Image 1 (tube, one colour):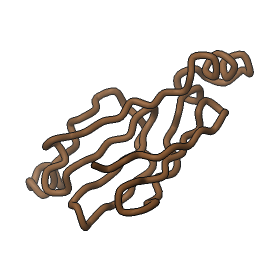
Image 2 (cartoon, helix red, strand yellow; image 1 turned 120 degrees about the vertical axis):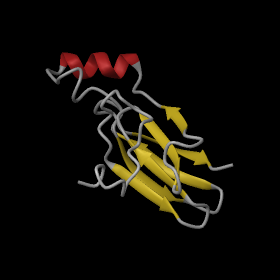
Image 3 (cartoon, one colour; image 1 turned 180 degrees about the horizontal axis):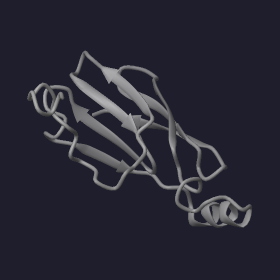
Length: 111
């Protein structure tokens, strides 16, 4: 209904089915951070398809192989699913992902 009424703008930045799960709204700068499978997106709140920035952050190949050896599904479980997007200070965001069952965290500078 929203699409038919032109009441929304769908995000076209990914057709890969990246399993979006984590959101962080930055109203001050008019941005939305989106955590997904192996990716972090930085979107413009006015038009989510304008100037999309994307960070590719997969689990290491070794961790993916260990995950598969443990009997997990390679496509739905053995990836770096971004689960935490937390403001750290005015310039950085703290980010954590599953890392194919070997969690990893870091900081993103929002320049």
